[in-house]
Image (cartoon, rainbow, N blue to C red; front, side, top):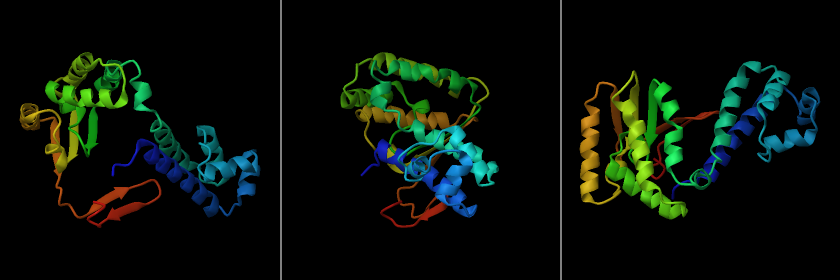
Length: 235
């Protein structure tokens, strides 16, 4: 069963809270000691460690400073911001349709030099064909019950993908093998999409890798630990 965005975000926030607690314990501080050093009520410290409150950037800086671990603050802040961003609901983002969401990332795409993309369920947006993107966005629009501006959104997605062939950009794309089999659109759409992937792979700036479905080992680096998964049911 796919992990929901909300549960994924909670796990990310839990990782941040765990890291902050580890820093406190490594410094030999009780929750009350740390609260005094940070000038905050002990209840706030408890809420952060129990994932009941999200710490601000300044909260994290003060926490790390009190623990004598200021060098860890930037990494924890980055992880906390990433966790917060996961809570942005796509339905709210798409409340007026999908076109704006596609157009909004164009400046970021144009100034990004190195793209590292991983997709486990669909072809990455940067290398989608109009037919594939249309079928995918239509299904998303129906599921979310948001305004249907699929034609405009697809045009915007194709326009933003000009970075594949223009400018000084490099792309490292990784997909799981089922992406190549999962039907998005009819047979003609899928044939066109797979053909386009082969064409894009020939570009010197693009590298596409496929994780075999039979892979038996997955290595993941998290905020607090490195995890090696070897159970077939979890790979």
